[in-house]
Amino acid sequence: MTDTQDDDTNAIWHLSEQGCYAALTHDHLDIQQAIDRVRSPAAGAIVLFAGTTRDNFAGKPVKELQYTSYNKLALRTMLSICKDVQAKHGLKGISMIHRLGTVPIGEESILIAVSAPHRQAAWRAGEEALEACKSRVEVWKREEFEGEEGVWRANRDGAVGQKVHS
Image (cartoon, rainbow, N blue to C red; front, side):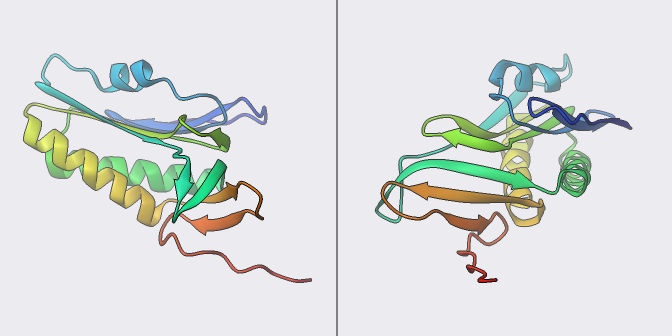
């Protein structure tokens, strides 16, 4: 298993193991790099999911999203999801990359790429990996609305966080 961490705010933290790659970064996400990580001559299909920041939520204008995580735990959880999905669907490769920090409207916050011998497995695996990421990975987002105070949400349930008064 490869484990890379750096204290630089532009660092990429990642774990990889036997066709599985999980990463957190403050940088813009590179779609081609995500696809290239899973490319295989034995794969007849590559599926890529790119989650982007939209300009609204529940009728409110969104200014941007901010993501934070518990990096070490989040990476272990992401790699575990990748390994489980890879084994279940017979994938040739899987890559899960989540962006941290501020993600403006129209930019990607997550990329999940999978390759498989056949398209059905790739489609199913991509969806399953995304849902597992949202339900299990230790990443939180803050929605910044135009003209309002931002709201923290847990990825796993999307429920609005509670403000703590000290």
